[in-house]
Length: 194
Image (cartoon, rainbow, N blue to C red):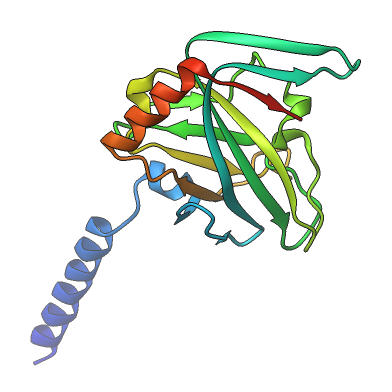
């Protein structure tokens, strides 16, 4: 009887170990950001901040005021996708430094370096419960628009790299017709920001 009980307990432990191993997170999953997805003008709340996509435009060129007050115009052979995003902190003063556009196929486009980061939302400090708006500007080919999302994350507080940072995924809601319309508008537009 004792042997049978030991065998049953042993098999249960082995079964539990196999179950735990097959349902364990991979190293990539363990360090991946915690994402919350939302659509146009929808407030997306993460643990540390909230954002909403307020406006979306496309342009062939962008004009902005540099820090010294000069007007600067930049152009692209593709298109600029300009997203006005409203944001607030929920816990502490923070910045949303990391923003990139992820295509439906998984390609990543960081915000363009042609527009000074000082003129984008990534340079603005967010205070708890005070909403601020700012721009993120992406330089992308027209083929990247359909099904794209803008991913926004706060700057890591921990110098060793904070794990499991929350991220907001702003679904642009661009199907094939919407992407074609945005690409057509970009040829004729010059957008003035900040």
